[in-house]
Every structure is written in C-alpha cells, then in structure tokens.
Length: 160
Image (cartoon, helix red, strand yellow):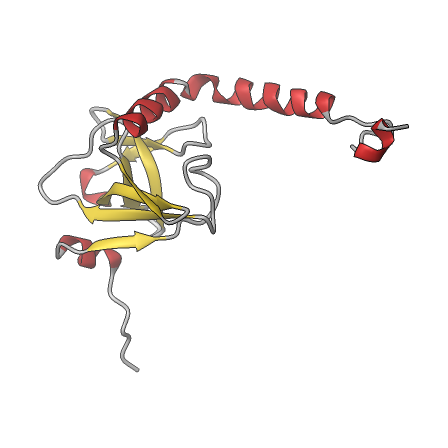
C-alpha cells in the first residue's frame, strides 16, 4: 500500500509553509494544545537565532517545537517555554523549520511582532527563575483558594 504522507522536513525544504497544532505543554504558555497553531517555514540558508522557536527532529525521530536557548561549541541547546532544563547539544542538521508566526483564536501573530519579540526575550531570560516562580504561584493559588472544606474551594462556603 502506497502512503500519501510526505515527510515534514521534505515539505519544508521544498519551500512549503506548514500549519501544525502543537501537542503537549512543553511550550505553555505560548502554545495551548487545541487552541493554537504554529506556522512553520523551512530554515533555508538562514540560521536560527537565540530565542527563535524551531522545529527539530530528535535522534529517535520525534519532532519537537522548542526555543533556541543558545549555541555552544558542541551544537544547539533548546528549551521549552514551560521547562527549565535545556536539551542538547543538537546539530544544525536536526533543525528542519523555524516558527514564522502562530494563530491564536483565528488571528495570525508574526514572530516579527515587536511585542512578541520583547515577551519572548523576557521569558527566555527568566529561564533560571521559572521553577521558583511556578512553585510560588502554585503556593499562592493553594492559599488563595483554600476553602473551609478540607482545602477544596467552594464559593458557597464563603457566604456562610
């Protein structure tokens, strides 16, 4: 039986622009599964820059959409927006596409947008502080919504 499926890397190298729906939460809050779509273009001759979101293929064949954290002598190091550990080194050849923009609630947002670039830079800079920030936010959430019913928040209990 002949397959109609084409390899994503081949499609991108042929100049196609692809829309994909990221799965998982490694790029949360940028991508929410089921809500957002990533618009990916082939890398062509361009090299990804620090902060760019790239589509790469792991050695096991899995496709991953993560942000380029930095380039080292050994290769590229990636990190998801919802992660604190970097992955790498990866070779330049493993990168098959670069995020051109994304679609959220039907609206296209370009990676060239100044607000997007600014927020991405801040988020990347905050990588070492993400885990303590996440723990503090969870602690505040637990304290704020702790009800009188064994820690289960019930708005009706506050009215009593």
